[in-house]
Picture 1 (cartoon, rainbow, N blue to C red):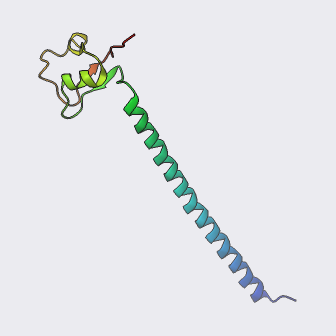
Picture 2: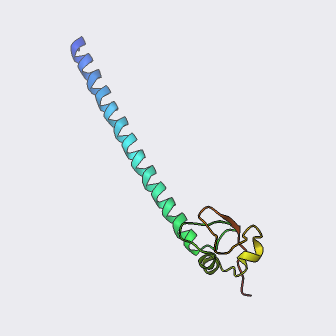
Picture 3: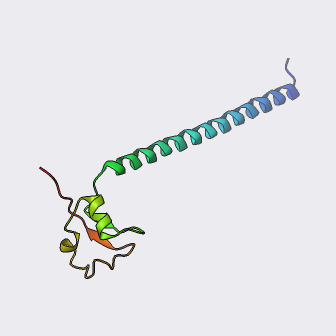
Length: 104
């Protein structure tokens, strides 16, 4: 016959092993999701390098209309954006319309 103290000890060992197993599974799932998010972020970054500019463009730090024009392939930025009164007065956060020129 099995004594009550040995049954309790066995139950404690089993519950301890289950707790370790659950903790290990949580750690592994966290590592897997972090790696997956990293790969997804890298894929988006690579896609943005080869993608033309969006139709709505927000001017970044250090950009000029000339640099945006070259980057996005739109030589008519000033004509398409009547809210730009002075082409030299471009600042970060300014929203402009871009219509990339396409060679056929």
